[in-house]
Image 1 (tube, rainbow, N blue to C red):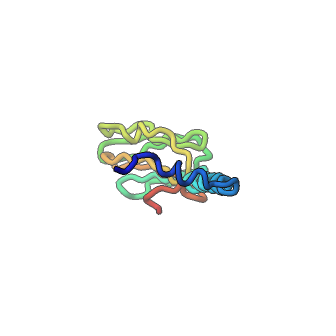
Image 2 (image 1 turned 90 degrees about the horizontal axis):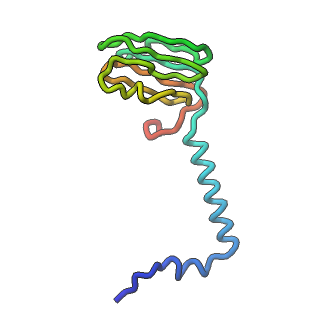
Length: 133
């Protein structure tokens, strides 16, 4: 019968040399740096607010303000403070968009589907995700 011992330890580890370990270490560092660079967006410059699928307003994040956005269920309130944006209140039943909290990186978005209101942050580069792959 075949043994169920780990083959990797017995076959590979004794044959790895210092250069091999250095290559593995540098490769791991490169993967970590690329992951950080590709999956983190820049800070956003402005917010695009939509209502009913159409752009309601584009506002800079440099000025603190509250914006009332009409929707089919009522009024949603978008809060902008300290270069961040969030949906502060919404008449939707489950409040998923309100619970999403503060958005600050380019490409982040909060959507209230029942009230058809959304806020999306934009900037020089977008945060990577599977939608813009």
